[in-house]
Length: 194
Image (tube, rainbow, N blue to C red):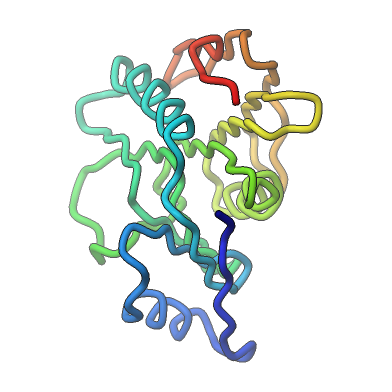
Protein backbone atom coordinates (compact mmCIF):
# COMPACT_ATOMS: atom_id res chain seq x y z
CA UNK A 1 0.00 0.00 0.00
CA UNK A 2 1.29 3.44 -0.81
CA UNK A 3 1.12 6.85 0.84
CA UNK A 4 -1.70 9.31 0.23
CA UNK A 5 -1.19 13.05 0.06
CA UNK A 6 -3.79 15.49 1.29
CA UNK A 7 -4.12 18.73 -0.66
CA UNK A 8 -4.46 21.95 1.22
CA UNK A 9 -4.26 25.63 0.46
CA UNK A 10 -0.71 26.37 -0.74
CA UNK A 11 -0.87 29.73 1.04
CA UNK A 12 -1.39 28.11 4.46
CA UNK A 13 1.24 28.98 7.01
CA UNK A 14 2.98 26.60 9.40
CA UNK A 15 0.50 27.17 12.24
CA UNK A 16 -2.43 26.40 9.92
CA UNK A 17 -0.77 23.19 8.72
CA UNK A 18 -0.08 22.02 12.27
CA UNK A 19 -3.61 22.87 13.40
CA UNK A 20 -5.05 20.87 10.47
CA UNK A 21 -2.65 17.98 11.20
CA UNK A 22 -3.65 17.96 14.89
CA UNK A 23 -7.41 18.41 14.50
CA UNK A 24 -8.27 16.23 11.50
CA UNK A 25 -9.53 12.71 12.11
CA UNK A 26 -7.09 10.48 10.26
CA UNK A 27 -7.56 6.76 9.56
CA UNK A 28 -6.78 4.81 12.71
CA UNK A 29 -3.33 3.27 12.73
CA UNK A 30 -2.02 5.44 9.92
CA UNK A 31 1.20 7.48 10.00
CA UNK A 32 0.41 11.13 9.28
CA UNK A 33 3.31 13.47 8.53
CA UNK A 34 3.81 16.88 6.94
CA UNK A 35 6.53 16.60 4.30
CA UNK A 36 7.55 19.79 2.51
CA UNK A 37 4.21 21.37 3.44
CA UNK A 38 2.10 18.44 2.20
CA UNK A 39 0.21 16.22 4.63
CA UNK A 40 1.05 12.60 3.85
CA UNK A 41 -0.90 9.63 5.20
CA UNK A 42 0.89 6.26 5.12
CA UNK A 43 -0.14 2.83 6.36
CA UNK A 44 1.59 1.48 9.43
CA UNK A 45 4.96 -0.13 8.66
CA UNK A 46 5.15 -3.81 7.71
CA UNK A 47 6.51 -6.62 9.91
CA UNK A 48 10.09 -6.68 8.54
CA UNK A 49 10.25 -2.89 8.82
CA UNK A 50 9.27 -3.12 12.50
CA UNK A 51 11.73 -5.96 13.18
CA UNK A 52 14.59 -3.76 11.95
CA UNK A 53 13.44 -0.83 14.10
CA UNK A 54 13.06 -3.09 17.15
CA UNK A 55 16.57 -4.53 16.76
CA UNK A 56 18.13 -1.07 16.50
CA UNK A 57 16.04 0.12 19.45
CA UNK A 58 17.26 -2.77 21.61
CA UNK A 59 20.90 -1.83 20.88
CA UNK A 60 20.25 1.85 21.60
CA UNK A 61 18.65 1.15 24.98
CA UNK A 62 21.79 -0.70 26.02
CA UNK A 63 23.93 2.46 25.66
CA UNK A 64 21.85 5.60 26.21
CA UNK A 65 21.81 7.49 29.54
CA UNK A 66 18.84 6.95 31.89
CA UNK A 67 17.44 10.42 31.17
CA UNK A 68 17.24 9.71 27.41
CA UNK A 69 14.42 7.87 25.67
CA UNK A 70 13.88 6.07 22.37
CA UNK A 71 10.49 6.77 20.78
CA UNK A 72 8.78 5.05 17.85
CA UNK A 73 5.69 7.19 17.41
CA UNK A 74 6.65 10.68 18.54
CA UNK A 75 6.45 13.52 16.01
CA UNK A 76 9.18 16.11 15.55
CA UNK A 77 8.72 19.50 13.93
CA UNK A 78 10.97 21.33 11.47
CA UNK A 79 8.90 24.45 10.72
CA UNK A 80 11.54 26.02 8.46
CA UNK A 81 11.17 23.00 6.11
CA UNK A 82 7.37 22.76 6.61
CA UNK A 83 7.93 19.34 8.13
CA UNK A 84 6.30 17.27 10.85
CA UNK A 85 7.89 13.85 10.88
CA UNK A 86 7.43 10.59 12.75
CA UNK A 87 10.81 8.86 12.55
CA UNK A 88 10.93 5.10 12.98
CA UNK A 89 13.17 5.78 15.99
CA UNK A 90 13.89 9.04 17.75
CA UNK A 91 16.44 9.40 20.56
CA UNK A 92 15.84 12.43 22.78
CA UNK A 93 17.10 13.55 26.19
CA UNK A 94 14.01 14.03 28.37
CA UNK A 95 14.68 16.57 31.09
CA UNK A 96 11.30 18.29 31.31
CA UNK A 97 7.90 17.98 29.64
CA UNK A 98 7.66 19.56 26.17
CA UNK A 99 5.51 22.61 25.44
CA UNK A 100 2.99 20.41 23.62
CA UNK A 101 2.16 16.71 23.82
CA UNK A 102 1.69 16.53 20.03
CA UNK A 103 5.31 16.95 18.95
CA UNK A 104 8.84 18.01 19.87
CA UNK A 105 11.13 20.50 18.15
CA UNK A 106 13.45 18.38 16.00
CA UNK A 107 16.50 20.22 17.35
CA UNK A 108 16.11 18.32 20.66
CA UNK A 109 16.90 14.99 18.99
CA UNK A 110 20.32 13.35 19.24
CA UNK A 111 19.56 10.69 16.63
CA UNK A 112 16.80 9.83 14.17
CA UNK A 113 16.48 6.48 12.44
CA UNK A 114 14.40 5.91 9.33
CA UNK A 115 13.75 2.50 7.76
CA UNK A 116 12.57 2.96 4.19
CA UNK A 117 9.30 1.62 2.87
CA UNK A 118 9.05 0.84 -0.83
CA UNK A 119 6.35 3.45 -1.48
CA UNK A 120 8.03 6.43 0.18
CA UNK A 121 11.79 5.74 0.31
CA UNK A 122 12.49 9.01 -1.53
CA UNK A 123 11.12 11.00 1.41
CA UNK A 124 13.57 9.29 3.79
CA UNK A 125 16.50 9.70 1.38
CA UNK A 126 15.91 13.32 0.34
CA UNK A 127 13.19 15.36 2.07
CA UNK A 128 13.65 14.07 5.60
CA UNK A 129 17.45 14.04 5.37
CA UNK A 130 17.43 17.73 4.39
CA UNK A 131 14.97 18.61 7.16
CA UNK A 132 16.88 16.69 9.84
CA UNK A 133 20.13 18.38 8.78
CA UNK A 134 18.43 21.80 8.81
CA UNK A 135 17.23 21.11 12.35
CA UNK A 136 20.80 20.30 13.39
CA UNK A 137 20.10 16.73 14.48
CA UNK A 138 23.64 15.37 15.02
CA UNK A 139 23.09 11.85 13.61
CA UNK A 140 20.72 10.37 11.04
CA UNK A 141 20.74 6.61 10.41
CA UNK A 142 19.02 5.67 7.16
CA UNK A 143 18.30 1.96 6.84
CA UNK A 144 17.37 1.68 3.18
CA UNK A 145 15.75 -1.67 2.47
CA UNK A 146 14.95 -0.57 -1.08
CA UNK A 147 18.26 1.03 -2.12
CA UNK A 148 19.26 0.51 -5.74
CA UNK A 149 21.85 -2.25 -5.68
CA UNK A 150 20.53 -3.84 -2.50
CA UNK A 151 19.72 -2.93 1.11
CA UNK A 152 22.10 -0.50 2.85
CA UNK A 153 22.57 1.36 6.11
CA UNK A 154 24.01 4.87 5.97
CA UNK A 155 24.98 7.00 8.94
CA UNK A 156 24.90 10.75 8.32
CA UNK A 157 26.39 13.40 10.60
CA UNK A 158 28.00 16.84 10.78
CA UNK A 159 24.96 18.72 9.45
CA UNK A 160 25.60 22.01 7.63
CA UNK A 161 22.56 23.84 6.32
CA UNK A 162 20.35 21.18 4.79
CA UNK A 163 23.16 18.70 4.04
CA UNK A 164 24.75 15.90 6.05
CA UNK A 165 28.14 14.31 5.54
CA UNK A 166 28.16 10.51 5.10
CA UNK A 167 30.00 9.10 8.11
CA UNK A 168 29.60 5.44 7.17
CA UNK A 169 27.73 3.35 4.62
CA UNK A 170 27.40 -0.45 4.57
CA UNK A 171 25.45 -3.15 2.79
CA UNK A 172 23.17 -5.36 4.87
CA UNK A 173 25.32 -7.99 6.52
CA UNK A 174 28.07 -5.58 7.56
CA UNK A 175 28.21 -3.78 10.92
CA UNK A 176 27.72 -0.02 11.21
CA UNK A 177 29.12 1.90 14.17
CA UNK A 178 27.38 4.88 15.76
CA UNK A 179 29.91 7.29 17.34
CA UNK A 180 29.72 9.01 20.73
CA UNK A 181 27.52 9.60 22.57
CA UNK A 182 26.26 6.14 21.52
CA UNK A 183 29.45 4.17 20.85
CA UNK A 184 27.49 1.17 19.64
CA UNK A 185 27.75 -1.18 16.69
CA UNK A 186 24.59 -2.24 14.87
CA UNK A 187 24.80 -5.64 13.17
CA UNK A 188 22.86 -5.23 9.92
CA UNK A 189 23.24 -8.98 9.39
CA UNK A 190 20.38 -9.34 11.89
CA UNK A 191 18.02 -7.40 9.60
CA UNK A 192 15.50 -9.36 7.55
CA UNK A 193 15.91 -9.01 3.79
CA UNK A 194 12.87 -9.05 1.50
